Length: 130
Ligand SMILES: [Zn+2]
Image 1 (cartoon, rainbow, N blue to C red):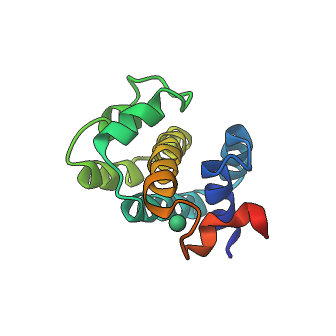
Image 2: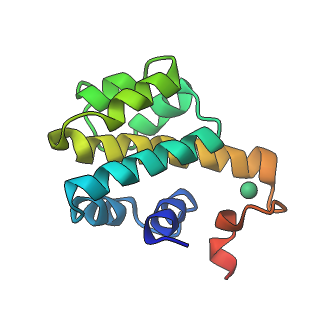
């Protein structure tokens, strides 16, 4: 499992502090940050994210609702808006990561609760047991 995959999923499962993940993200170079933003979007698609997840996540993201990635994530169509978020300039990377990761916490938590119910074969959903 890649470091990024582990960190993102640990945050979603409450095994790692959100701010610690943000610090890790900010320590990366801009090319790696874009790769991580794209990775989070892939996971959001797997988790069937909705604009409502984005809005709910925003409340706990630590980002002002007026910054560009926050405005975009609250809009539909969700996947199109996320495509715009990953293309924002480096000055917006940290806010974009906060907004996308927060949406993932909401979407993935729902998926684990409603769909997986502790019995799924998604290896990344069983980090706390290894
Ligand atoms: Zn699962």
